[in-house]
Image 1 (cartoon, rainbow, N blue to C red):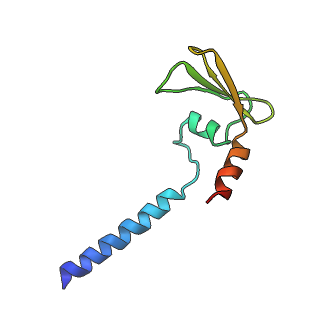
Image 2 (tube, rainbow, N blue to C red):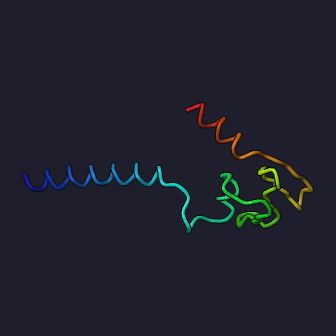
Image 3 (tube, rainbow, N blue to C red):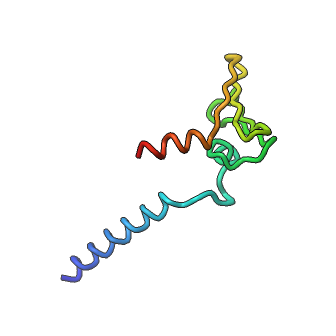
Length: 91
């Protein structure tokens, strides 16, 4: 009986901690790139991708994010707030 209670308690704790971590917001340990892409950056903030150093991100004065790939010579501009609205409505 004790093993059964311990197993149920462990499963409940695991489920609660998984849902709590999924809803956690931005904190001081979040990366600069993560905050820029999620729309929390300030104008002028820049970050370089660790997985592809040719890619840089910069927050523009209007809050949009400019993504530049130096190797390919491409530039794209996105609005993180619009992207969030678009993806959150599809849930």
